[in-house]
Length: 401
Image (cartoon, rainbow, N blue to C red; front, side, top):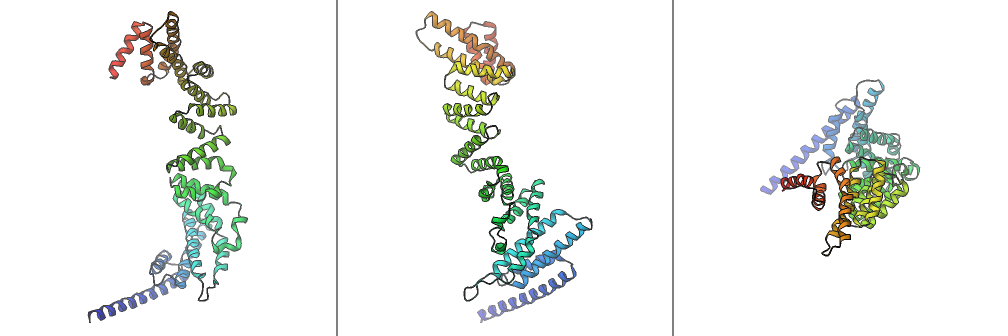
């Protein structure tokens, strides 16, 4: 008996729900006809479609579209009449029209009992949306310029997705639309700004056809691979970017840092030499080479390159540091010998003396960077018996402990 009562209550609830939905549909038609309460009508139709029993209700889908379309027309009219209206809302409504009719097309194209698909509305809906499709691209750029990257990506993704939608197959956008690669670039850019690897990589293949922005594309890809901890692809992309655009400031320093951290100084020198072929005077390229030479213990060459930098810019502190450290390291290596001839001792002092002015200059230029200059100067002053100077750095050493 109880089960029967429950069953009756369920039937009653369903009947009441159907009656309520019919009333909402009737009200929606009236609202669309009068052009009133359109946002409310839109939400009402979406609510009905959220009901699994009504998901395939063509009438509701079409009423939802008409509610959105009417909102677009009213907004467009206000702009035409130069009345106050948010332009961004027009782009949002464009997006909604595409989403609704693309969703409806999946329903319209469902195969019949014989397995055949014969969409009734596809041609007219495609023709309608085709004239508004540029708004998706323009809206994407509009939002990107406003730094509203999520909104921008949504519109650009829709614009690009039209090329694969059966709804638009008559237009063959993949072959006829010359803006696809540029739109893909902006979609990648927005995904990159959102730090969303999936969104960034989704349209990469198409975006790489946009040769105008190829350099920036490689940067976005590299940073995305870095975000995903994909070191192999990160380095490969940096290398491609550097080989194509050696003077672009993004690729070179990251490659140098990567191989420097690995201790692969031969690779650092090779990359620096390639960079110097593009610009033989660029200080960052010369400094990277001098650092590689220093770590490869090719000390004379290190000093020579460092002097080239100093000659061009006397305020470049790290060039003084590399040159000073080259002489200092040589002195330290000789000083480790247990048996030292008079010649060796003189050579040790000579190298300390050569290192000193470079490191003193580095200290003057970067006084707060004592972790770099304090210990070398301490040892230099100690070995050269420079009492006053030694006492001063010795006090500094004690305060650091």
